[in-house]
Amino acid sequence: MINRTLDDRYTILEHIGGGGMADVYRAHDKLLDRSVAVKVLRSQFTNDDEFVTRFRREAQAAARLSHPNIVNMYDVGLDEDTYYIVMEYISGETLKEKIQNAGPLPVELAIKIALEIAEALEHAHQNNLIHCDIKPHNILVTKSGRIKVTDFGIARAVTSATMTHTGTIIGSVHYFSPEQAKGSVIGAKSDIYSLGVVLYEMLTGVVPFTGETPVGIALKHLQEDPKPLRDINNTIPPLTEAVVLKAMAKEPEARFSNITEMIADLKLAQVYMRDDQTRRISREDFPTQILPRITTNDNDRNNNNIDVIQEKVAGNQPKKWIWGLLALLLLGFSIGAFLAFGKFWSTNEVAVPNVVGKQVDVAKTILAGQNLRVTASETFNDKVPAGQVVSQYPEAGSTVKEQRTITIFVSKGGEVTVVPDLRGLNRRDAELQIKNAGLQIGRIDEQYADSPTDTVVSQNPRPPAQVNKNTPIDLVISKGTGPKKISLPDFRGTPLTTVNTQLESLKLKLGTVTEVPSDKYPPGTITAQNPAAATEVVEGASVDLTVAKGVAGNIKRAVVQITVPEGASKQAVQIVVTDTNGRRVIYENVHKPGDKVEKTIEGVDQVRVQVYINGVLLQEQTI
Image 1 (tube, rainbow, N blue to C red):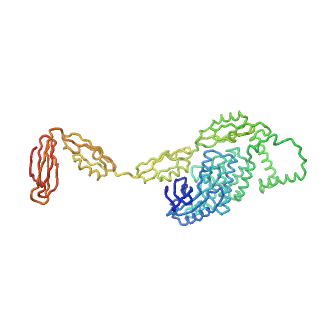
Image 2 (tube, one colour):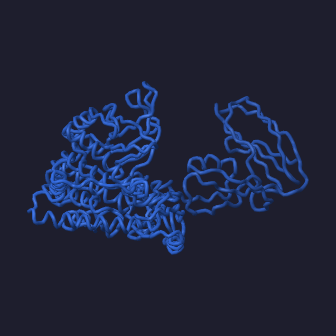
């Protein structure tokens, strides 16, 4: 696809991503002179008429979406047998890469990102379009920090067509909903579930369900509850945890009734998340003052506000539980505030030291030395050695009160994954499987093998080894069965002048020619070869030859002149020389009567020259 121009407009420049159904490229729009992203549908889906119809209809519907948190779709087209979608090109990183690089995100940031994703989904749902594949890989983070949801337009078409024809479940197993795992009807609440999983991963740095096989992970979505968020990261507020758990309810009826309701609760959680400035309490914030007596009307108004909160928290629960739940929440909030923010009556403030990259014990000692509390959470990180601090919150340099709790995220080393078996796969599919497993593409070598060209012959590490994520996987790719093998003939005793033609017919090359004196072979005759006769070599190999040269002696020269006698119209003329180096034919050709032949003769010591016409000796002389 590289350098191909679709519909004389979009020139493909580089491959920037891909999935199970399409590849994504960066391209140049020649008409508008801008960079765009082009998603190209893979060839195995192009022959299904119903799928192609749904693909075009859903892609065109997505192109009509217009929202600041959705990647804009510009065009849908068909060039020969290639179906493609043209989208806005985003320069940045995916949310998955952000989580892998930074570990768990600060709660405020995670809620902000979830809100922007939810608002994008709200716009799509209002236009009767379900995403079906919400995951961090499909969330782009621009350099300015704006969130962009991508992969609209193909997911609904793929799911519908695939379920109709094959019963295969399409989606990302770590993020899809229980109803997707069962292959049943999906709806807007499926997107809500997936968003809950994404928020879970942002807050903890890990996905809620893992397993050795996709089927095992899918069963966990159906049967198991995720590990409580606060068991992984105890700085997560209870209200934020409640939003995640409600979004990830197994039954769709138990989730938020729609994405708008989830947005409202995310904003409520955002209100309760206060930064350091709003949490700081100083004498100026609470001056000594005289308050008026609280009247009955004031109590009524306050009670009304409490009723509103009770309805929000408890829903339709009986009122006898409301007061208990409210008291529990208030108690928890008070205790949490005390533990998290320390002596809120104190006016002493300290600057948070930088402990990123330090061993956990050293980091705790440094923070304790500044009169700060410490809580540690573990996270996978293949770039930071186990036991060292990956990140901290609040960040270094922030001004906080004494006894404030500082959360440090400590590396557990690289996350372990199972190496997939890539043997027999073509190169592109093998590279995709490596990336999907969270691994890196290592060294790629090519060799001849009894396997189809461009397929994987072997790999290192071998399956089913368990390695850290981002470990490079080396591949050996087949170049096909290789050149034909040839058994070398015996060239000894053959004149060098006749060997070149023979080598060409065998698709071999003449290598080095070395002359060596020989009393056994006439000059110009091959006396040895390398490789030896009967050795098997491949087409294109070189053959080195050793050629006899004349023995040193008294060199004599003479000119022989012949006139072809009357007789047959074609007469074979042959001149033979015999000397110290042996007998050899130095001239042989066919002539007509009357032709004159003149040949310079050279020999060593006693030289005898014989001329034959049609095999009959015509003349003989000694030089």
